[in-house]
Amino acid sequence: MNLGPIVNSAGGELGQDISADGSVLWFSRGWPEGTPTDEDIYYAIKVEGHWTEPVPWELNTPFLEDNPNVSADGLRLYFTAIYETIYGGGYGSFDVWVSEKVGGLWQSPVNLGPGVNTAYHDANPSISADDRIMYFTSNRPGAYGGFDLYSSIREAPTSVGESGLVIPGSLWLGLGPNPSNLFYSGTTIAYRLPAGATVRLGGSSGFRVGDSIG
Image (cartoon, rainbow, N blue to C red; front, side):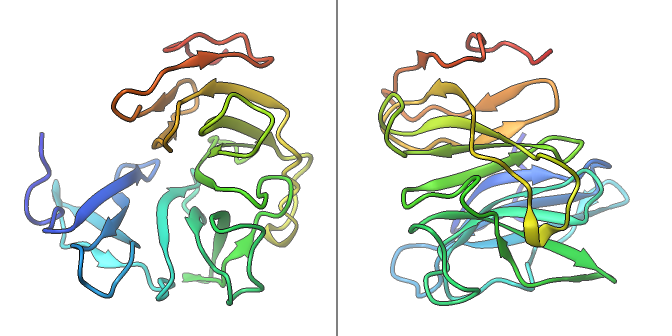
């Protein structure tokens, strides 16, 4: 079912995520070609069973922000961004970042560091319900080519400033030549394949396409 004109616009809405209680819809919006605004993050709140008019996330910048993914407690927002000249820059053109909500206010984004990000295109984060496992896509070398799915495990509870996410150790699926939206529900990995893409299985996980986790 289409969510209708209150949520959707003449731009492109994509990379959606929903809060654990189902009350907040997060997504990124790309504007029609020719407008000066790049992709930004938006959210809409459900009131009496209906979504309200989406509003832009207060930390959007003139740079790209997209594919938001909110933690189960609603206090951390993971997302993809290109911050080449702000917040200390990143490791590549696309990196995964996180902002923590403190006292009702979103704090300046923090790069997840080399445990997740590389000089390549690292994007589409999806965090497990216990905030310990990060699933994401990357086109880094050494895998199957194009964009592949990776996981990174947090070594121990820590502050956002030191995410504790270690170098990815499990390669899940090869998704072909283009990036795909990724969603992790806690038991199942879901993803969208580009037209004409092929799926290549491999790595240490032993999963098949469509399998659930543990």
